[in-house]
Length: 165
Image (tube, rainbow, N blue to C red; front, side, top):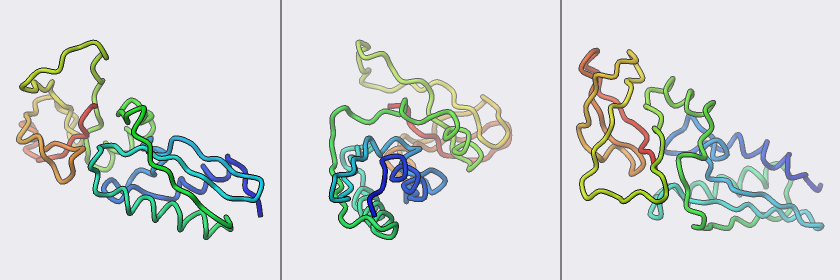
């Protein structure tokens, strides 16, 4: 069976990010492309959210397993680092899923020509539970590299926020 590119993307919607299981690897923007060769070989191009993302091996294996399960005769997963992944690749529909899951979605990213400050000054992040903006950053390091830990001063809930990069 030879799949179409659209079928491959539809099948990959079932592959969830192991660190953010509410989003598929397609919704997260990790899957950049999918090509199907004349012999049915599927080549999927992925970009890690962070260069050292520990979930990438699991994601590669999950992609390969999902496509083989759907009948792809051979699967190649290529990892590329250029262009670098950005939270701009997460669509608004996926951001809504993040918030409903209890993770504040990423805010806007910086302009390319903006200097990176030595100390990050974070704008307030909206609490995914009570929607208050009275929040503060507890630590830049959440359960994964792509998230930070925040506290809401209104409902007192700790929560993670996806970092905008």
